[in-house]
Amino acid sequence: MPHAPQKKIPATYMRGGTSKGVFFRLQDLPEAAQGPGEARDKLLLRVIGSPDPYEKQIDGMGGATSSTSKTVILSRSESPDHDVDYLFGQVSIDKPFVDWSGNCGNLTAAVGSFAISNGLVDASRIPENGVATVRIWQANIEKTIVAHVPMTNGEVQETGDFELDGVTFPAAEVQVEFMDPADGEGAMFPTGNLVDELEVPGIGTLKATMINAGIPTIFVNAADIGYQGTELQEAINGDASALARFEAIRAHGAVRMGLISRVEEAANRQHTPKVAFVAPPADYVSSSGKEIKASDIDVLVRALSMGKLHHAMMGTAAVAIGTAAAIPGTLVNLAAGGGDRNAVLFGHPSGTLRVGAEAKQEGGDWVVTKAVMSRSARVLMEGWVRVPGDSF
Image 1 (cartoon, one colour):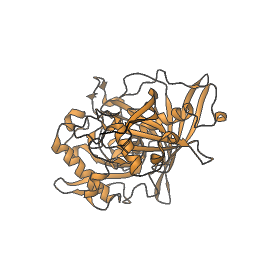
Image 2 (tube, rainbow, N blue to C red; image 1 turned 60 degrees about the horizontal axis):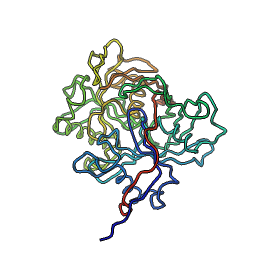
Image 3 (tube, rainbow, N blue to C red; image 1 turned 60 degrees about the vertical axis):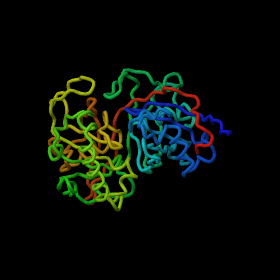
Image 4 (cartoon, rainbow, N blue to C red; image 1 turned 90 degrees about the vertical axis):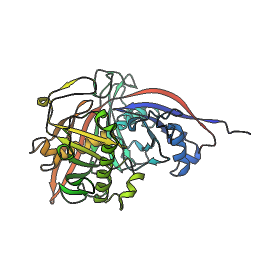
């Protein structure tokens, strides 16, 4: 019985922030996958190695975690105000779907360097030495992001001494600015409240801050759900009942935020919204063994992605954290001590992260002009990825 041979597709495997993903130029994809639809989704699923009932992604490029089951498609932007269009696909590990509902803030750190190295940015905008400013159009959420990419002798500078908790080795610092980060066209606080009473059957009524910034996120108080805010992955990811409770909070919060109409729809929208819990500062030991002192941080945050506690912090969720911290009265702001602030240093399972945000009120509504954080990025491998020719 004849079988279709494998197809070779140009691709680059990159780390961005605390995530990894397979990057493609849109023009390099097979014609059937250059537009949205079933062919594109099937191709990316096969590239990553999903759906995999073993949840290992052995037969693909994925790493069997939400942080490593990611794909990026980039193209030269047709807008004169942007250099590159960035489309992100979060690939489910065990289910046959790709979630296009949000951005990946971590991989955003790699978009600028990939775009420069792959001819997607006009040469006139790239300095021989210094910092290149890459204007990114984030197509999933239709927002502008600006990446500041270091350059040395006409090439992207990837090595350096910038350390990022959650990443083992240092690299060059890439500053990323998320402009007007309120997600989509809706209100930053879709319920109209900084804090809501969220009723979750089987759990109770929880105080919740539900915000659209960076990525739709539901914040609850750690103490209200029986946690300290110092937990590491093993405390939650091995507890099926705990994960089910978090999914229930996420699903009911998604309905309140207007992202879905019925809680059952949450199963097919795993990437958004995120759910996170916050607590005032406390001492803890990070997953790498690093001691984090309460006096060195403003707030504790733990967040779940694709149904599991994240090993560090999603970049888009960090934008949500920074934005919520800048607005007096949110649960994040209150856990950080309340009051006005334009930056927050929070503790996560792998260590700490600082994110800044500029917030102001306009006509009674809160507006955040931008959120800023530093990440790093590096090419891990480049060449071709191969997939069976009949897989898409």
